Image 1 (spheres, rainbow, N blue to C red):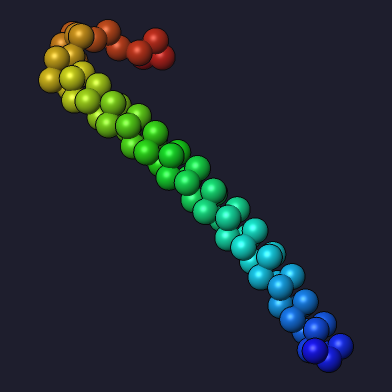
Image 2: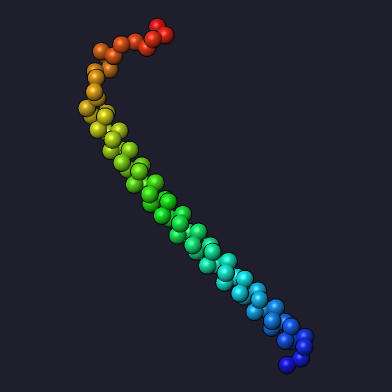
Length: 71
């Protein structure tokens, strides 16, 4: 193999190694982001359920609430 061809193959192998490393890093980032999204969706659903429960059964009749202190 000529020196130029060998250098070119070496450069391509280096680029491939960097791309494989980058791809692995991006895949890991996507996995972590999906886990965060899943966690946030669970939290959001819990908050929706709590809000629905409060709307259905408020602790106090809104008409009986005292006015705020600045009135």
